[in-house]
Image (cartoon, protein in one colour):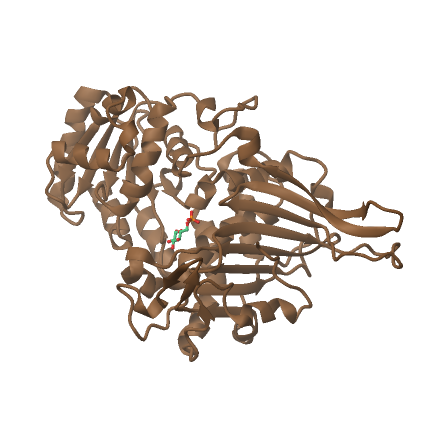
Length: 508
Ligand code: BG6
């Protein structure tokens, strides 16, 4: 994450200077991720003048497209008002394409030749960023082929970096195997395992909030915090991704990566510097202090759900089992809730409750830090509207932070009510139309891996998820679907907190 000395009240993207010369090789150039996120993000970087002058994109995919077809396809990924602009003109001249099969060794020889030609034309100075926006089965083969073709070799000051998308493995063993395979070719500092949650402004702001303000850190521990909740609620179902999702499920799809990123940032110790390894070592330590659930705990403290048909607003939506690409008898979970413990001095005894689900009542991602009650109740005779000290970090769709506390309700009788102090990003800094990928692409180009996952972090996330996967596999669910689309998930998720005399924060 690039830092600037002063606050830029406009867009944070304009606070940086252009990255150095490089070529970006985009494997999966006609896929969904390229269309929805990567092209819009790259184009935002063009508009913010953060791409180098010496830059070229070489898209690689199976589709038989000419370079003209590819440019036309890319332009269709952008809003109409962006086409025909000076920025588009600049961008489209740098869009090149190569048809290829990712498993074909000959393709990498042609890739090398093509990159050498592009060197003469665009002068990326031999620096290559390979982006693997492909199906996961191609991650290891592509890296192996890049190695065999000599394309990953860094020499004479030229860098070679590889961005690997998620899912990174399907369990701990496969994640370790993938790490072994790619590390046989690449040094860790060449590997950028992406998690797009780290590109979200509010997620990055957790670090600034915690470590650039002296007032929160002294109370950020088990003496003052009762528990922490992480909610990731989506209203969407599986859209066109039923085939992938039905083999993955919400636990694999969201928890070892996105949810663990949020948890590690909220719970980590202060890093000694803002260097990638200093930050990531602290995140990794928290993940290692998280206690994997044993089998009996999985039954008690992990909840799974699958949505049935229901209503989202006025729209009637189908059950998960009726979605395209999903088996009509599917036992895949679309909702997960868990209670986890972190065994270290700061957090022992403070439960972390997590929930993530599809087709829930509202799109909303947040972290709630619930503080303890006062040790002594002074206003015991005053009518008190239920209140508690809660710090809510809202990640999406609204980005902001609010703190609630008790205040005297005006009037002759002493009554206590709850009030909020809140900050919304858009009000202070203007609306943010970014995808989150801008910062990650830019950081990779400038060689800053702070917002990327290291091998031990990925493995730490899977260590927590693995025992749950095992128990759930051994004991398939019998009562799916168990929540209606448009609700807040299965009853068991509420009971998980009720057993501890707590409740999920109400999201209105
Ligand atoms: C992806 C998951 O990584 O994150 C999707 O595969 C999920 O299933 C998505 O919908 C959520 O991302 P966001 O940014 O919309 O919260």
